Length: 268
Image (cartoon, rainbow, N blue to C red):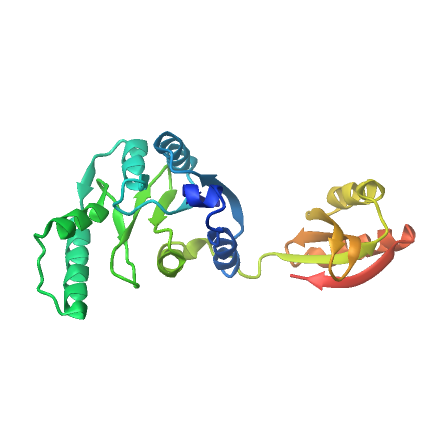
């Protein structure tokens, strides 16, 4: 199972708001031993959102979609999900009940009468319109749910709001309640070393040799202005903890044979 993310909103692409979801979804997945395979940023363009969601449904992946599930004119995600899935957009009975609970809660907090038939409250029910056959994602912040819709195979797309305070607990709920079979704690490790004064072209033959000799991935992360190490390359291997020590030992031996200047060693 691959995991992906879709982050929706003109405000992200314009720079009006800085995206916080990418770093958080990497953190939440990483805590469960799952790598994020890809992420897409999409503006508030219904055609592009629909196309992106259609690909997500067809991928067979677990995908989290952030944003655009409100009920204002610039919120298109629910409608696009219906178009992409080929299903009608219908009011979920369970979502309607939760939204009406929220309306009652707000009325109580403000000392106002409960008026579910008031036009603005009726309009709020739009937030419970999901593609037919969707499952709800509970929202512990204000009860307004998100939703999930199945894709190909075991794949599923999970739709949450753009507000981090709502979205992140909802993502955690999905992961822990529906994705535990793909958790992979302690099945991979990453070991690397800081290499000073090297060019990647000098290190490429060693990297290629390591991948031929060991069932690991080799990575090279150059930096020219690191605040601590300055110009350097972080060179390392990642993979099964059982095979990593031998690969890393060969990496270090190769670097010493090249007479490289080495800094700290890192483990993740």
